[in-house]
Every structure is written in C-alpha cells, then in structure tokens.
Amino acid sequence: MLIYIHGFNSSPASFKAKLLKSYMTSLGLEQRLLIPELSAVPSKAISQLEKLIRNPKLTNKFGANCPLSLIGSSLGGFYATWLAEKYDTRAVLINPAVNAYELLDDYLGENINYYTNEKYELTEEHVEQLRRLEVDNITNPDRYLLMLQTGDEVLDYKLAMEKYSAVPSIVEEGGGHEFMGFDRHLKTVLAFCGINCLKTYN
Image (cartoon, rainbow, N blue to C red):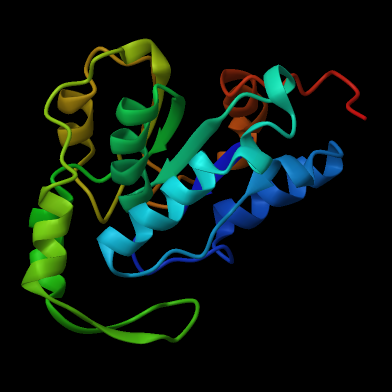
C-alpha cells in the first residue's frame, strides 16, 4: 500500500499526486495507491492518515507484495517523517518542510486552499499541533529517500539537507518547490517503496 501525503494548501489534485496516480494506473496498480484529501487542521490530518495505516482491510489486502510506504511532499514530508518513525515504514520526502510550525506562523488567520477553494482559519493551536509532531532524531536513515531541488522558492532546502544528512538523497540544482521533472524519478521512487515497475501485476 502506498500513501501519498500532499502539502499545505494542496490536495489530491496537485501536480505530483495526479502524475503518480496516472503512472500507477498505467502499471495496473491504481488500487494500491491512496491519496487522501487531508484536513487543514494538523491533528485531524494525522488522524486521517493513521486510520488508513491502521486499517487492516487496506494493510492486509496486498500483504508482502505491496508493503506500506509513504510519499510526502512539503508539509506532507513533515507528516510522513512522524508517521515513518512511529510505524517503522519507508518514506519518500519531496522538498519536505522542516520546523513546519515555524513556517506556518506566517499563515495565521484566514487561508484558502489553492485547489479546493476551502476557506479556513489557521490558529496558534494548529501551530502547536505541528510542534508536537516534530521528530528530533531520525532513527533509521535507510527507511527514507530524500528528494530536494535547490531552486525551491518556498522552503530552504539546506534545512532539509541538515536534518536528513544521513538519509539517501537525490539533490538537483535548480528546479522548484513542486520538484520539476518528478516524472523522471517515478521508477526510482516506486522501487524504493517496494514496487517493481518492470513486473506485471495482477
């Protein structure tokens, strides 16, 4: 089972989410991919993700043929780190947010989701919820794959390089926050998640 975790003010309609879904569909694996639409409230978003991870109907559906893995972009990478540490699962982190609770201080107040047009208010309590999800130490670097582009216009990629310094990484010059050319790495990402793109799945 593969769970894609979108970022702040994003949705399953984001570029990378749709690209991944299209590619999984081309492999006949669309049923093994979950892309939940997450709440803007951090505690609710984590609860949504944990319910998926703990759902025996989902986790047992494919067994060893499709182990649980996470792909998190931006704030989704922040969530994926916490979940990977708790559930001992693999995680691909794409331009992940570091110290997300500090970053979102600038967004306190009314916000609108770029994809869904949902209006909501980000509060100090929401920021504190993010603070409680901070992972201080990466216990098993090999469970992660870090993907960064130095041209990220939203996040400082150097913070992620420092936090995940022991993690296997793909670092590209230029690019942007959306990770331009993500399609070039789909086979690598899925292979890391335990999916052989050269195999025919039933």
